[in-house]
Image 1 (cartoon, rainbow, N blue to C red):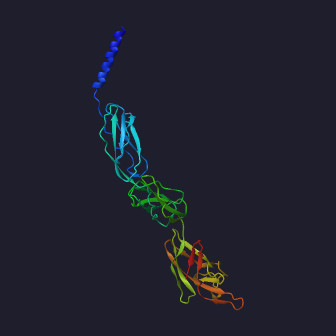
Image 2 (cartoon, helix red, strand yellow):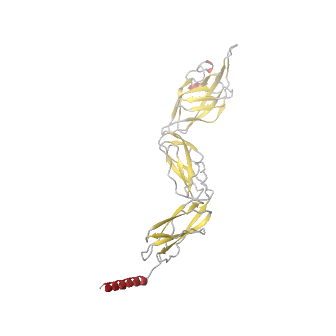
Length: 351
């Protein structure tokens, strides 16, 4: 009885071995094209992935050919259809093509996969972007466009982001050719002076220095500002000058008064007056007030509409006090004068 069982087991084993020997074996399928970065830096490790399967369901081993006369060892075993990741760093720069092979447990190998072309460059970050171009001023809650570009020492693709100076930094753009202009818009929710800068990074995640700053002034939506346009024009007797004042704001500005100070001759400049038609206090000799910083109100306020200008005539008097003799009064302009208007605008005049 025992001999019969032993004989039956032997025959069964022979049948199994024979069946296994007769079963046809197929080589693994060609692995998928390797997936990974196409722009790499020298001496930097990157990860590449592939998928390999076997028509018989056998486990597979994988080998990467890195295109630089080196290849990985056969590494396995992986289940058929698994995603497999390998790493590599290139010691030289240049163009390389990565391919993958698969092998089953009976050592049948697949054909080589299609190649992934990789450019390997030196480890240099992108150059700092150029100063962003855009408006120098604007209004809160309005969007404004800024533009910049960045180059790369190795001509790699770059992405760019902007820092808006209000605590907000944009997302990175998509990678694109170096020196290609990139535009982004931003709106500030509060008025103030903001510095806009830009930064670049390459496909190896190396980042540049921040760009030179671009300063923009954001003003409230309902706002006015006066400024002088052009140079002051001296009167024929050199006793005064004309200035043209423009309103840069969005609402009209009514100027009801101005205050005067003399930056360079404060000990001597004592008085000033505005053209008689708008002067509230026509005193003898045109003397108004008692010294720098005095305020003079207009009898007829000057209204300046947005983007419009108005000529204002100013007469200045330098009054010299002589402790050892008579005081003298000379109708001549001083060197540097500042006029602060009723809306807070400060104008410096150098006649």
